[in-house]
Length: 536
Image 1: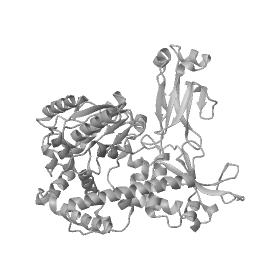
Image 2: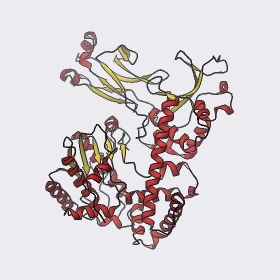
Image 3: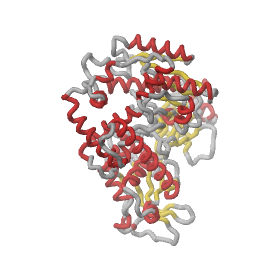
């Protein structure tokens, strides 16, 4: 098996690293996957992109007797390559981390969440743009089989949304997003900072044995994690063990059955013999699915560019009827993918979490698509606003030739050149009680910021970053704010139909000053919408 050359790796990197990348971290466990990636990236930077900086990041999980020894080995390997290593131990039991998993209990998921939290923490502290990870083609096959087993009832071989959107595996490049936490200070939370950081996986088309060959050719001493083939720990381990014929019967029967289905589907999709090597066939199929998913993303991006517009901050106007008329053969997968993109863009739920995409449930998406893309079945003037997941309100409107927007109602007068569309916006704030997901009033302590002239950044409603510079407030407001006995406070609240942020300076129940998006440009307050409509 051949190793990966410098020119081949340069080709693998094309389109994977964002153009803005200047500082890269490698998630480094000491195994052949991450070690070969670290070596290849380091060599590439030296030969082709000396302006980039590189560090390796090792997380000591403290879950095995050899974990500290492995961490020291990673430090030594990095030092040999001339790459700085940052090693961090998981502080089990110290908030926001859970207690150390008890011996003999499944730990993979909780360890993964703790690891990702610390990886992002290092990215933030070291100002890294991109985290490179050593996932490879065999990992992609395992991911495919895991998702197929979860969706076993839908394995009919026909074109489905799961087939198009779920089975393609990991993306070579994706935005970190707001993380998997539940808010500021929680495990896995990344917030607005996560919207500007990336995860890159340049080795997804390369089988693991070539990574091992790369390490061996260059004398790189990797370590093997003995838990990787213990099927009782995770379903991924059980799949891995079965694929190499090491699985026990308790785990293997269902996985072998699922693998057989996957092999038959792969052979049918690729038009080849299902008796050829299963690993090679499945790798080819995953790569094929990835190409289809990328083509789907590109098609959706083109449709949004030609049949949608952003009339106000945090809104999107979709001309769904025109889209159907101009593209009569549009597939269900395209409709669902487009709606997922719009939901994620508008929703106040954390960007990147399933809740921002209506849970990614096919039944939910199908019902939404029925409303948005079948407008001709109901007279337009009878359409009404509705919500259908992710706290997104869909309002039927007409775009007038002068750029104004008219809400649809039975009494609406339709003019020549009016364009019908659905306006997606954040659902109005309602008082659902203490457990509501409505945006809360966020009050901030400003005395320190005034004295030190330190801006206050608030991620509001997971949609806007509001930057407040209180020392630039008008003198009459500053005089009240800086009085020792003052009950004055600054708050960020939602206002209007589109639920846009507004900064209020209040003293008790009295509002002294208001800064909102309609205010003239000022130095006191900036508003930045942080959600993106892109596929990654």
